[in-house]
Length: 263
Image (cartoon, rainbow, N blue to C red; front, side, top):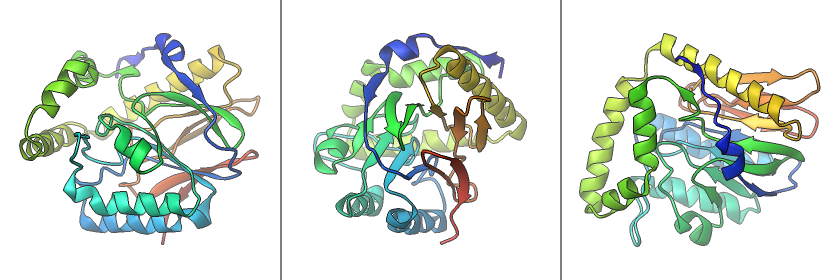
């Protein structure tokens, strides 16, 4: 990681939306369902069943799925049981906000119209337990290597998404599964992840310094939990990866706490 590359256009492209006035917001990221063992998936399903007892709203900050692409009339079959549980959480009166990650940014109105989830493919400003919060998955915010930056822009480009959706879903999902394995193998270096985590924290601190109206910055992607408080009480949070120790966080008006789900 060469250091933080600050993206001043992020603020201009960010949408402001007050999602919920919930007192306790559960934050989770990086479950990568579809590329993790069935035990990890089952534990996440148990976590979703427990969300109404853990908080009053749920914020998913990207890479819930590995991977997701929404077609006009097709959803990934292997994620059906997770989708059903998300719908059950919503049916119990728990608002869900889902910010797309680099593995599930190609969503659409299936989440918003059919499931009633506040879905945002990119960064967004929301109200989290009364805190004005800037949420982004975190990919593309800091430069790791020119090839990673190029891949980030290619995967977000409308031409790429349109071309992929022109493939038969069976071909598209097969191709995505193969690429996911390759990319995962290339991002297991602990030293690389630690540098990425440090650069991401520097990005968050700079953003908070430039934007005093923001109370909380929530990022993910590096799979490294982080909780840093400024002297004025504002906070940078990365809940860590669900796939690594069943990690999540709970945000209230008074505190931000890192947690691990034990069932």
